[in-house]
Length: 145
Image 1: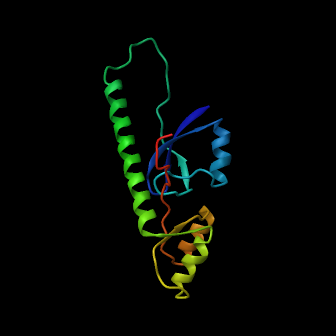
Image 2 (image 1 turned 180 degrees about the vertical axis):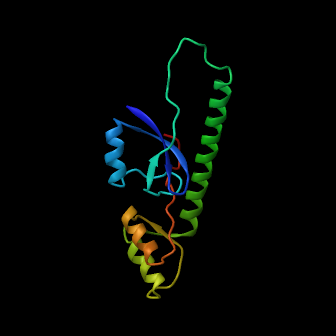
Image 3 (image 1 turned 30 degrees about the vertical axis):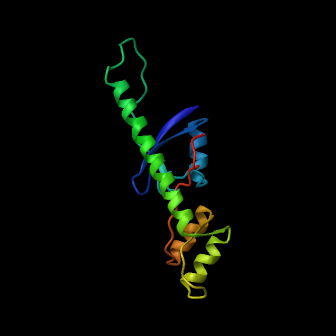
């Protein structure tokens, strides 16, 4: 397994694990790697420092930095859970009919309302190309695993 630092077209940076460099290349080309922030599938490897092992002792700053990162990750997950609750409370769930319902509202064939549901990356991109205002959000579990 190998971990890569990745960056999406909107400059969001994140990490992901892959079986190999070739596995990343295949998945990225097939648009199967998505940014956890915006859902974008235009993803590339970010510049990374090589992992070099040595005999020197680790920096004393590493532990506090990891603690800060863990705290920030926790805050991020808390914010995403709050966003999920907000969406669920204020929007109608339309499931896999999302692209169809969004188009109907966009073209005036249905009353406008706030909706959420499922759409593939290609479906979301097609909606954007038509001028339909849609956003992808990371849909995190409402509890810790």
